[in-house]
Length: 401
Ligand code: GLV
Ligand code: MN
Ligand code: MN
Image (cartoon, rainbow, N blue to C red; front, side):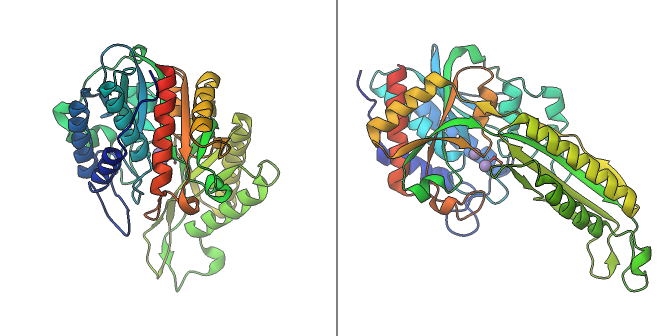
């Protein structure tokens, strides 16, 4: 057969319909964290769209939603949960593009295509939790006990999905996985290019650290006698930034994105701080050297400043190369659609494809992000670029059939 003919209007309509579920903040912002009311409503909406497309919708134990084609099929998709302040395309684009290609392929008598929306890709509880469990990277028992930042346990949160849960979806029914996504960085936008074919996805490490000192009066406690938890965090941050200089490359990133200072009052010397420490790189050895610096520095600061130190469990995903043959199929499709206006590139964001690559050939396709902005309400992509991505995905799937 030729190239599967997608219905662009239907694709855009579905993308906007999904955005309306959990729409929040300014512009096209969406708030749909894993297992929230909006997340579950979005999954229920998607299950209906899957059924209308001739796919059999099932939820696994984690709440990942699969729309299954019969027989052996290509699996396409991403996730529909969002960050606490998320954009409308991070995850949703790959799921709705998958739905449209699956539906169009079925109408045209093309290759069978299944669709997935993995649960908790954005890590309310961990790191790409749904696909990590499906791929066996994380045990179901460990996942059940993960806590979000407010102390809610995953097992309790997923109970909101009730009787939906429980299907077993065997990876062997799929021949390959392709995830379309926005780039979430500035490279394609700055270069005026339309498509990125992902070479590899970076590795990530993530842990929670706490320093506990002494809560005290902010007026009467002399500076020399304080055991101020904020000062410990501040010192920790300066020292690791300095020590990382000899280890990192310009592509290495690290982030303290969550800080909880206790009790958080103007007139109280804070007695406790709990914060996230996350670092990412394409080289597992560099990630390990950074981990050593983080642990050493935290211990040094704690002992110098009279703090009790608690280092939480470290969650991580290894750096993963995308499948060479599938990458080639995507590259040919990109060249066919936008000759000379695409590139091979790494992914600095984490994706479900990292986990799925352990089960079957997996690859990813990027479209530009305006201004490189993502994990923010401002996230957006030109409509024409969304459509180009969809066409490239359809071409690639046609070539796989
Ligand atoms: C996933 O969205 C990530 O944090 O890269
Ligand atoms: Mn995503
Ligand atoms: Mn994301």
